[in-house]
Image (cartoon, rainbow, N blue to C red; front, side, top):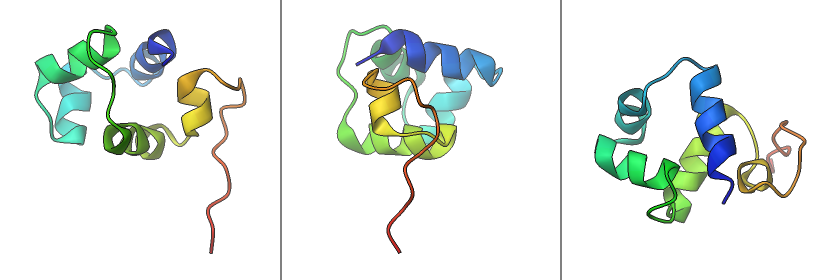
Length: 74
């Protein structure tokens, strides 16, 4: 997981950890633990982050530098 990328996306959007925790319906401490690399981000939260940031899981994981999301299946 590329925690620096997740933090940068949040900061670029001018959101606090509490803002993101509210969007994800989780506790702020839980989100903070994800962002600081203390806890692994569960798959369902990772998918929600891709929707919030309009990007791909590969981008969040640091596997690509292409921020655009993949096209969705019809």
